[in-house]
Figure (spheres, rainbow, N blue to C red):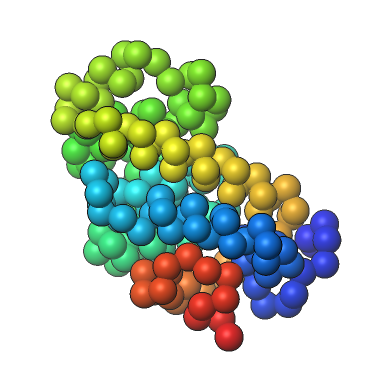
Length: 183
């Protein structure tokens, strides 16, 4: 049960965003700036970073919705690839660059000072550039905030995967919004 009263029918981050539109607007602007770009990282890679950080934070809603979006971008229909990334990304067929970036994202999730010069060097050795490293750190940091927002207010999270698949298609089509695709 949520800690405060939210409008019915808006699970996860959507409830708090509808509750507080003046804070939802800049949060959605940030999400769209981070996630709706193919500069440096693909949208699928960006969503995979958000999914991984959310899974490390044990935020069910965020890891499920962003996993659904990543799966749609990566053509992972049964979500098995995204699940394997969350469980043990070093043993997946991700590129060495993405593995290095996920290592950095995992360190950010634990705390920014956990990112090491060795991790950055490894990412660079595998082809990551400054933009990709920057965006990985910022996506990971933002998702820590989003995850804590969702879980700190004890929002609800549907268990039906189809809810997330439908929302994923709305996000891909319309970007991040607490309104589009729900009215």
